[in-house]
Length: 112
Length: 111
Image (cartoon, rainbow over all chains, first blue to last red; front, side, top):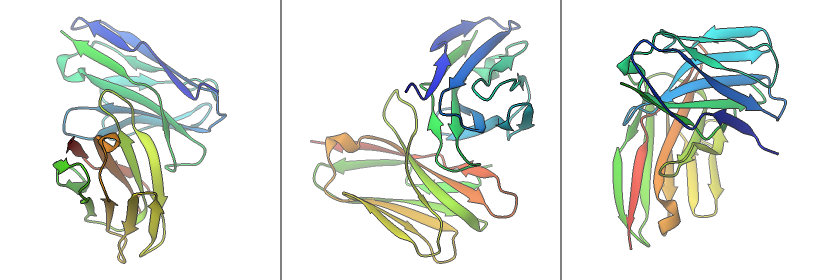
C-alpha cells in the first residue's frame, strides 16, 4: 500500500518554464490537496479537490492550476515559474474533508 | 496572516524533560489536528480533537482542546531524541470550514 506518491522529489526550474508535479493515491480517498511549505510559515493550501472532476482554490492559488480527472490523480501545474514559487510542495489526501490527511514525500522545487 | 498561532516557534529541550507547545486561534474551531514532521520528511497525522475540553493521550504525548474550542496544547513528557521534529497544529475554522495550519514548533533535544 503506497499511500500518496509524489514525483519528482527534486526539481530546478528556470524562470518562465512550466512543469507538472504529479500526485497519485491508492487509498480511494475523495479529498486531495496541494500545499506549499515555506520556512517558518507552516503549510499553505494551494488547491483542493472533493472528488473527480471537482476542484477549488485554496489560500494561495495564483500561478498554479490543477485537474482531477480520476479519483487517484491530482496533478499540479506551474505555468511561467517565478522565484516566489521556490518551495516544498506536498500533496495530501483524506477520506473526509479536512480530517486525518496523508501526505506524500514532497517535491522540493527551486526556481532560478 | 497566520490564522492559527503556535508558540513557541522553537523549543530546545534536555532529554528527559517535559515541554508544552500551544496553538491559539482567534475564531472558534470545529476541530483541531496535530501533525509531526521529522527533519527532511513529510507531515504525519498524530491526532484530531473535536469536543470542547477534550483530552487525548498517546503514550508520552497529551493533547488538549480548550473549553472555548479556540486553543489547544501538546504536552510531551520525558522527551526522547525520537521526539525531534516540527509539530504543527491545524485548526478547522467553524465559520467557513477552512483548515489553517500553524507555523509549527520545531523541537530539538539535548542528550
